[in-house]
Image (cartoon, rainbow, N blue to C red; front, top):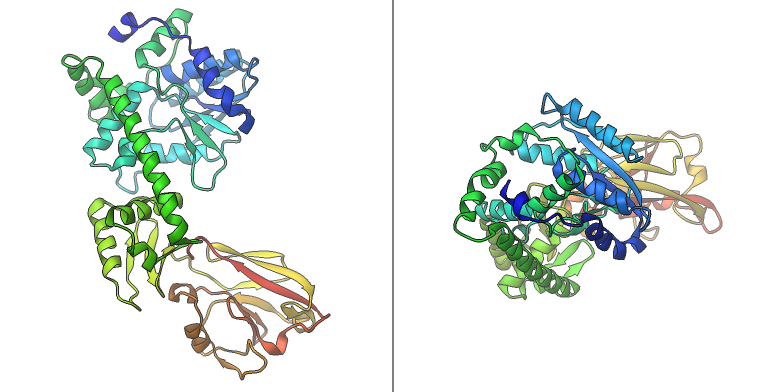
Length: 448
């Protein structure tokens, strides 16, 4: 191709070594996402040549999508290449299911990234290059993406919120033609996925039809588009820094203080809410819906409790605070036989033993115990100085958001309700000072 003829071979090993050298204090285990195609073969080869000098613990991961009749041959080819380089390879078979109607490309990407989550490494290296960056910018521009989408692919990011594995793209500043020229100069081969020629797929259409036509009018359009993505990434970094400043006065743990949030200028409210959603790994609503959410939040009167459904759960207002609420997880009754912890409603219920805390052990002895949700009509006496009262009234007086009450864990011993999360132990069953007891502690999911 023209790019190969006009571009001299690039010293990729030096580039990838320079990329990883400052990152090694954070971890030396590097895994390459190896498809067997041109770009991942080049990245694996370059890293293999510098692994001893850095040094790195190098491995590879091949995701077998099963979409092509050649998929088994590609996996075998990756295995042979890794054997020749004396590198361990993990092959992960996935099922690509477009149940969301998102299209085959998006469904395959989702399955691929789910496989990445099982990678045991500090860094997962992807072989995206400068031309991929240009295609991503164009795709996101045509989708009407915001600034984060137009910043395209970052050089480095966490695989997911709360994860330790970091995705890196050491070749993001390198042109496709340079990579191909470097492989050809070394006599290395790679596989070609036949689907790359199918211009019915959007990315392929841009790569095969649009960018070549642009190149006939604009000099090196891929480089120009990649530069624009880099400029936008700088603007995104500034917006994120501003959101972090605003969050210090607005974010309270997993929730937003609505009065302080609404006191911000409109653009900063939108910026902070998008930042908060991204921070928790939630997908962004479209711009019109986000604008409507912001409008209703600004107009909400004291005591109002609007709710806004999103793909990953819902935004809910309660007592002047905005909560991110994951989808409801139905809670079934669970017998408790003294385990240290039990899963409950997307969180975990832990039991801490000690003297003078929680439920006295003698009250539990010889009695069948279970965790259940409310059924109605329950009574509790958390304060020995006050009479037993309906649980419904106690919850209404508490600061517990209404959507938590239906999945609140209640500890029953036989027919006796002895503890309710958020309210405490019934006074008749509380451990006295010096008396052995066990204290249940419910750790909820974020926003739950």
